[in-house]
Image 1 (cartoon, one colour):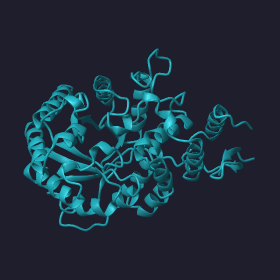
Image 2: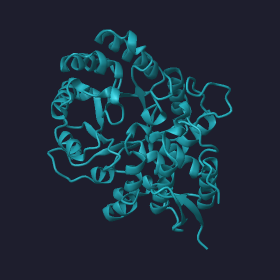
Image 3: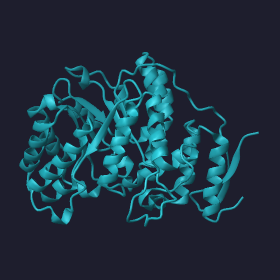
Image 4: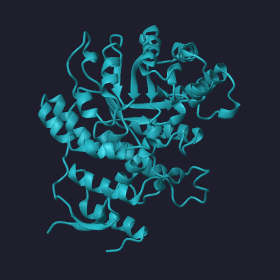
Length: 395
């Protein structure tokens, strides 16, 4: 007999829902991917900490690092201390640095494990940032701390820079300084304002094509210092256009949580191998990690149909998790981790579990089931019922 429960509908009523009963896909062991794939990973809050959750940060380190080991076991790299880890939405810089240290230590036990870590300016008092030089000093401080741990950098978009920069030339000055002194090639990070409204007009203009020209000019001036660029604009055509203009050897890491399957598969066009496909640095890979691993394994074995058969059903879930206000997508990612038994509770750093409605969670549950992503269906149903009861919905 199928598992079932009553779920809220869009009309505000309750309706029975029966789970599909399809077993989640399991990735083949030992398959080497032909794409680099980073999952931007979430952090697990410590609900027992005696703190003010909106003002202070407490992390359950054992469970947080255990989840990174889970991602490593699936062949996925970890993009650490990024926006998926609530960087700038509850996770402060000292805690981020400790997270980076612990992730790098965990990776040492896993041959070939990839970790790249977010380097930004979020430790600065933004009201006290008056000049581009202040931004440079901020980047340099975090850069030195991460590189001292042996870490690879993801140079995150800076709210402080977006606030004080007067022109594209200011961006060029900052990135020229940072890239010129990087110890190893970095990943640049272009996060659209749908993810963070404070980043509107990044690269010195609200015109996306002109912004792209500035970013490409910076990369072209330092091709040996740039491993790739992650763009999160939720516009596949812009990503493809930029991908085809990258210098030889510089990768496009898709951050498009709406169109990732198509972008990773690629179209094969372009004068360089990297022009015809995207690698991945995605928050949604946290929530769909087993499916992502299985799909990438199929792609590496030349089975593009299987790749799309696995990833295709996950796209509606991702679009729902990343629906506007997109910056609240982290709540859906952590909800999935809770449903699937990767953590014992559904509380978040900064109290962010409250950013989505019960109807949102109900639809997320349906879409996760439709995508065969409920790893322990009985547990998922029990936990969904617990959330319903917390909201006064019994039965």
